[in-house]
Image 1: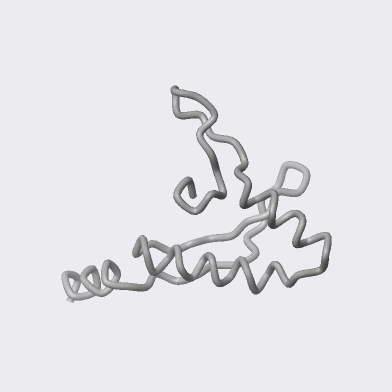
Image 2: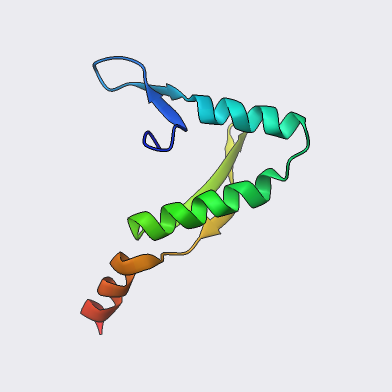
Length: 85
């Protein structure tokens, strides 16, 4: 998430804060861009790059809600499937 600009380092201790990219997404939301489609593309890329399932959750009050789940993809997941066969 640091690499994509969604988060930025806040200090030398490794703390992170919301990055510019999240700010741009907020602005996009205000202008009615389809954030669900945009976030799905981001989650799909992240799943493909990392080989891990990529969730998108929202926080409302004290509860997390899973909005989107991009399945594991890419070379990493393919090698895992082969090793389990």
